[in-house]
Image (cartoon, rainbow, N blue to C red; front, top):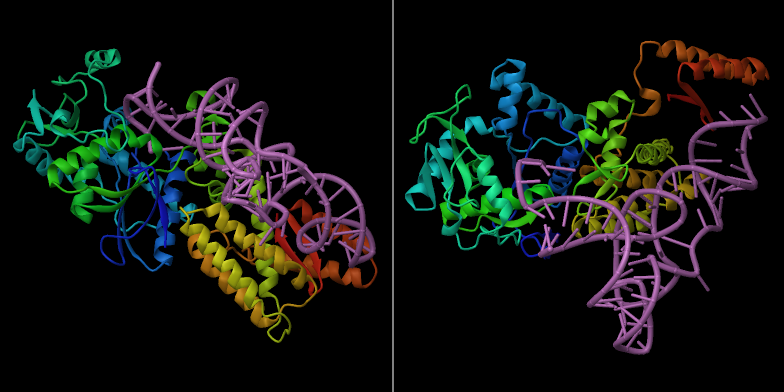
Length: 468
RNA sequence: GGCGGCAUAGCCAAGUGGCUAAGGCAGCGGUCUGCAAAACCGCUAUUCGCCGGUUCGACUCCGGCUGCCGCCUCCA
């Protein structure tokens, strides 16, 4: 049984979906105005891990992630590039999906775009106006916070109308609100901006409304879970609750789950500090995408994660050891006799599941996997693992990887390349030289290959090679 | 100013009122090897930021202090 920390109650709670076996989950997705950065990706990866765990636990998961393709930043970006909003956002939407695939993040059930759900949003806004929760002013529509008693129940923040900073905000805002705390549901169009027709004239949706409209459209009035990074707790999610519950009259979200931010080299990531990384930046530096996935999983989701270059190297080394272990496991001969490892694997599985069920403790789950490696390695080195035992461990790895997504790898010698035959020939020539005692020639070939990035390893079953 | 979080070995990082404080990386020693590489083995926190308190017993609970961070405005 999964226990999850619920922001709403500030404590861990047992999770049970409203409908047995079906989880309705909504995660705040990207605003497609730029490449996703690793902080965004950590959040999306968290969502992936949670969904994978729910699925592995036997649930059907209907997870929806929105694509915000209309807002100030996308409009400005399209304007600057002189292309249509649609053309501009499509480009970054494509990059977003590419990054997900690179990091082995499984596709969500639905990825609705804001611009394709304007009608649903207008329906929500109109209803809110009819019921007295919202008001129109000069073509814009605002949510009236004073009409929703429970405003602030998620974040504990109730904006104070007398707060001096609020008055400053009023001046900056081009849209007149009756109360500085009210938030915009529908923005009156400005010249040159893309707009949609509405009962209040041409305009475009405010930021928060898309989540209410689209989650309701795909998942119904009450969601089992709603995810989003901590910075969204206020005001975004607070506003979502207000507008959704005022609209449906029912509880909007049962479990609010908020992963913490990522920092880089101990500091908040920001463009001005020059520590702002996209996935592409890292891949260009030659980083292994799975090492990036691994590093993003090393800290518990409710803790800030310190992303460092050194950490990336550590992750790669940890993975290489894991992959190498798996390779050696799969090389155990079919007729090998020895330990069946049933007890070891059972214990590892039990620890693995217990960790994940305890507020998705992924570091703990990975520790269970590595602890097994540590336990079995000596037996493997002594040739005391039976064929059954090896298969049992590999089955566990495959099972664990349904959630982790880091164990599956290309067998090192399988890495495809046009010159494989040539490499094989050299490896063979070196082996013959060694057998003939011509170590000078053997070492020469080894150095030659090393220069091409090919590493030779001599094993009991003969030489094997891999690309560095 | 208001609210909240975190401080565990050289680094990253789990965790618990009392069994030997997970796991990873790095380092050192060793095995293996023609030499390497890879792999394997062993060692590496008597101690969990500091000071008090509660308790038979706290790293884990409470209070204070120090430091770091986040939110309160767009932000994953």
